[in-house]
Image 1 (cartoon, rainbow, N blue to C red):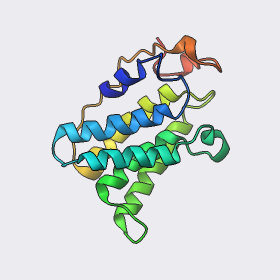
Image 2: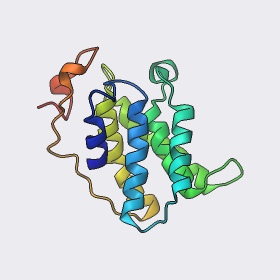
Image 3: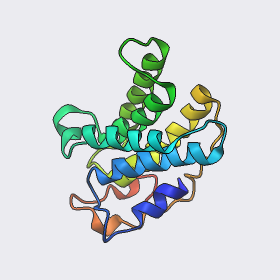
Image 4: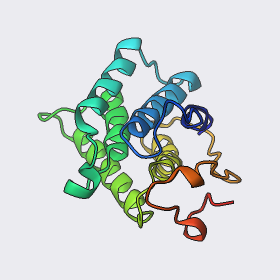
Length: 166
């Protein structure tokens, strides 16, 4: 979460809403897994996660198809680590279940959509799934986060409905 918070803090470079937030989610999760050290994550795998995220996290698709790019980003991390592919069994099923959980997690936070909230909620859930599915223990540091982006939201912040509203 710390990696994501740092990256989301670059207000002049990261828009409030947009697929850049999906890249942050993907990068933060794969970096945290790599930094933890139980699983070897190569530079090529990191690039593959980011490339897959970039190809599938497309602006507006959350509303057009119901699949937020942040869910795709978390799925890309699991897919690359597990080696998921069409001919595979549990690797692909696990990745799909992770993405389904991400979509559900994000759906519970809409009204209006907020990519910063989606990154935080998705990473919190992803950390649990990383522990369950990959046996990698990452810290969950989502408590006490207070959003500093409230005034930047073009559709209006959810305020008290958001876990991160100060």
